[in-house]
Amino acid sequence: MRTESAEPAVMPADLDAQQQRFDTIVVGAGVAGLTAARLLSQVGRRVVVLEARDRVGGRVVTDRRFGLATDLGASWIHGITGSPVAAAAEAFGMRAVEFTVGGYQPDSRPIAYYAPDGRRLTDAAARRFADDIRVVDDTLADVIADSAPDASYRDVTEIALAAQRWDQERVERVREFLEHRSEEQYGAWIEDLAAHGLDDDVIDGDEVVFPDGYDHLPRRLAEGLDIRLTHVVSHVLWSTDGVVVTTDRGRFAAGDAVVTVPVGVLQSEHFTIEPPLPQPQAGALGRLRMNAFEKVFLRFPARFWDDGVYAIRQQGAGSRWWHSWYDLTPLHGTPTLLTFAAGPAAAGTRDWSEEQIVESVLAQLHRLYGDRVERPSHVHVTDWQDDPYSRGSYAYMTVGSTTRDHDDLASPVGGVLHLAGEATWTDDPATVPAALLSGHRAAENVLGRGIPIETTWSAAAGGAAA
Ligand SMILES: Cc1cc2nc3c(=O)[nH]c(=O)nc-3n(C[C@H](O)[C@H](O)[C@H](O)COP(=O)(O)OP(=O)(O)OC[C@H]3O[C@@H](n4cnc5c(N)ncnc54)[C@H](O)[C@@H]3O)c2cc1C
Image (cartoon, rainbow, N blue to C red; front, side, top):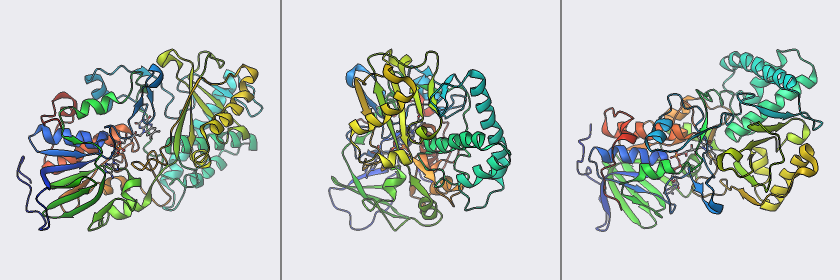
């Protein structure tokens, strides 16, 4: 076990005089990196956080144009019961609003469903549809448990659908829903997602969003830490003696490092680890992939859609790309719909202009609401796929991957290199809680002892601000 606040162990011989030395280097100031840095600095370790962007938060980022807080990355806590992020948000005084349809649930809250012909389903028909989804999900659990290692989510859902012996129309509606769930939850086409790819997608309790912006979380976590913004890390050299991290602004040395860059960055040629990651980390990394998932916010002069619903969903051929709209009006009192370009829609529109995307979305809203649809007054379309510091929105399990890959990725390397971040956490990966919990685990691994997770939000960081 390492002694707290110890000098870094003997470093490789080629270190230069300008090089800065720390106990621990954290790469990435997203929720995972900030959590690890905070916990380590709380016990007196000298920690530096190296961050490529000019801000903290990574994939938790809030746009504040037009006097509104628009979360361009994470929005939801997908279930507040037992969530460390819910506890942290409460401790940091973040205002939360219940919005329990984020996890692509069929009917957790009122949803206006539209049939393939564009007419709204009656409440009874919508209930029957939601019941069909539940029946298939019940069958699916056993099918997935018995599935072959190379089975895709499509393979298992087809088996579960066939077992129902329904007519074609009934099957098609649920098949469509399952495709959309794979896209909206993981930003992946159903044939590219592993059979087990949605296993950990469990929602416990209400879902909430943050009307004043999710970015309060990383900002509060960052308080008091030594964070070097606009430091792009390109190389991590490790040995059992310690690490040397190369950035575009010089090199940094430490006894150990916590690397929290997204899977897309880890896999890119612009970020190298030397010696390369061993097994099982390398194999696990090869089976995870960044997705294609973008948000499209449309703010309208007036509401033209259904009253009293959290979301609008359409079925049928028109729904291939644009199928779900979430009514964010209650957040700010401004008529707002959020939809997602997810999986094939995000890949297909990657090179489109904002105007083309808006036209394509509006064409589908016209099918449902006719001339009542007005031009949006403000639009925001994200571009996570082309963001060099994320290279997608979050990681999904490709066919052949197992849930264990997430944890394997986090096995410490040489006792000095610790990978953390959403993709390294098995229970509900691809989320902010996963990022926070992975940062906590990395800090525990660095120290070689347990740390109560509550200290993440109940104690000050203790380091000096940069
Ligand atoms: C559109 C979208 C919607 C989402 N919706 C939700 C949601 O509703 N609920 C939810 O729980 N989660 C959601 N997520 C996922 C959630 O945002 C992430 O799982 C979480 O924020 C990841 O945190 P992290 O610390 O692992 O990674 P990051 O936040 O990506 O942090 C990694 C940091 O490393 C930095 N970095 C990258 N490369 C380098 C480099 N070369 N040198 C130095 N620094 C580098 C990055 O700039 C970044 O700050 C969403 C994500 C997106 C993009």
